[in-house]
Amino acid sequence: MIMLERFSEKGGFRIVETATVPKKAVMINGLPDVGLVGLLAASHIISSLKLEEVGSLESDVLPPMIVLHGGLPKSPVRIFAGRSLVVLISETAIPVSLLRPLAYDLVEWAQSKSIELVLSLGGMAVANRQDIEAPKVFAAISEKRLESALNGAAEILEEGYIVGAYGLILRRCAQTSVPAITLLTQSYYNHPDPVAAAASLTAVNKILKLNVDVSELLGRGEEIRLRSKDMMNRTQEELAKMNKSHEYDLPPLYG
Amino acid sequence: MAVQDIPIEHGSGWNVAGACIEPLHNLTVAANEVVLTIDLPYVNQQRVKLRCPSNDVLEIYGETTRKITFKDLGAKHRHGEFTCYHARIRMPVPVDESRISTRFKRGVLEVHLPRLK
Image (cartoon, rainbow over all chains, first blue to last red; front, top):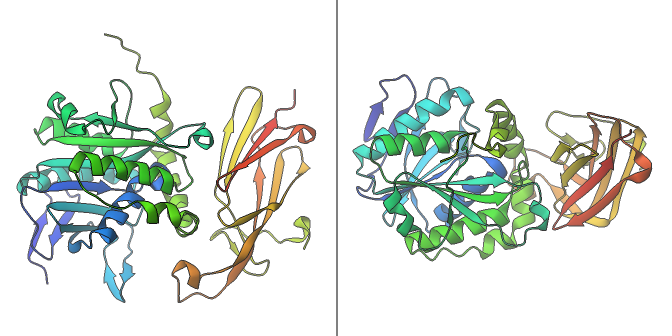
């Protein structure tokens, strides 16, 4: 049953609520990105904490597809909630042309729900990923005061570029005074990386004082990598279109 | 089955006839070499073969430690299984196949291919 349907004024996304969405929650974003870090971590949060599906994102310009879960047709972009968390995941790669409307509509919706923190989980591709046993987590923040909220879980990114949805979400949050942290974990570029997802989730545990067990992510790593292969392939096509390699560039200005 | 006998069937990445799947790979071109990483979950490390049919193509074949079905991966509506990985990867620059070096860690094969001068 649809409880509330919000139509974007910008022709982007409609956010359809099918159950009560808690106010003043923390919103976690797990969109397909480098190494599928955010998607794997957010999906693990949803299953571990048994969060309830509370809504979906719909758009006439998304690829014409649905995903079946439990025999029922669902939007590939869905919202789950519970335990003062709201978690967004997408089971399809979001086309580059939709990333800006997605960022604007999501942040506007987050404001309407009085979201206290937008926490986006992504990967940061590193060439020597094979040599890294414990991937490091970096954080970009929308306002300086959030540095203390990290609880030492991540190192602040002071300079650099963020390409894709998470950069746009962070910027929009900064513009609209919605507190936001983007966690970027060292990962493979286009290999699903459950080890990086576990590192990201460990940082989330520390920041939000959660206790989500990451051992399953690590123990079922091979299965997860194989299951995510096609998703990674499609995501990689979008990453190439958005010029994701720009993140390797050094910013030309100095202070 | 020899590497060269496997028919190439791209698209979904599954070759039902050859019981093979195309692995994810990432290719980086550096000044002196091409670096390739290939994701090979469930592969038997001792049963991975590489060859260069020409100086701009690398072919990989690797057997898995067990038979894997679509059902194992949550797809009940599709039938099929695979027991190996196979890919023929085109190099953006010519490489010297006699000096290829590899290392395998946590199911990811890293291949270094020196560029031909």
